Image 1 (spheres, protein in one colour):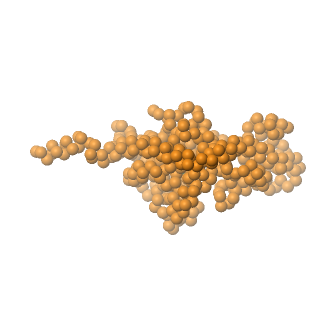
Image 2 (cartoon, rainbow, N blue to C red):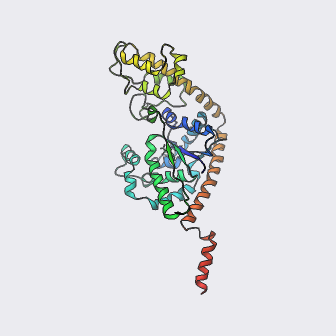
Image 3 (tube, rainbow, N blue to C red):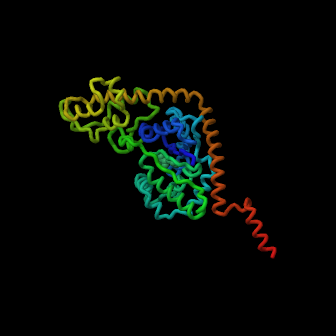
Length: 364
Ligand code: TRP
């Protein structure tokens, strides 16, 4: 069986380093690993509209931002099909048919949806499109028969729900010859990468809280954000013993730092464990640790920023890449949709046997 990657992001803003360590970095590695037959990367504009219906301009503006962030990180249109969700109308058709296989109560139990409804104060007035987006996400994943979906931890319930839809579809409509493929989620092995906190230590990174480091931030912006990061509120004097747990600077180091960074930027320590031990003992100041973190993050972000500014020079070409990607994705979606429709027995005009047997019935 082919190994196929699909994943995507809602274009509601520029991508930040939480996206990067949570999924983007991994995608680029997977794309380059040569182990996968196909890689699809989707800009989920239609999904973004499910809770931004009154703000289409925001979504429209951010499609290009996300595309630039993708290319800057090293996603390569020669190796990966990068496309825009709304341009694949087959996805709506798939969603419509999958809706028959999911109950309202099952959607209500989806932890991600539950959580998001709360966050958006949607309790009293949930848009139907938003409520059903896990079904549309199953269409996103299955149109290309994806086997592997690299995502952040928060997306696990979506993949679970998708698997159920695939299972149900195949057992109801195609028990002998399964049409759809059950995907597997791929989440980061590094715990710090699962959910990188905001620079203020809050669990959620969000634009409105102003606690994100964006991939497109300038070196200066990144430095300012790192230097003002939340650390250990009890670590008042350098000599005080410090706490690692819940200390954002150390969580970021867990996500970004490698041993080689110590040789380059902080040779007094061999590795992160030694640094942590000194901090815990007392005698190590926050500023020193922050400066080190700044060096580590700058090293990772600089090539991304430079590539981004190259791509920014030819915006029409970026749209062209997205257009070509969308055309390629659409062909694949049309093929899957046709298999889905024949499994569901709604392929009247291609079914010679149907027409023959019906005419036989009436010729008697
Ligand atoms: N729900 C995902 C997010 O909010 C975006 C997304 C849409 C997605 N369709 C997908 C992710 C399919 C993986 C697979 O980040």
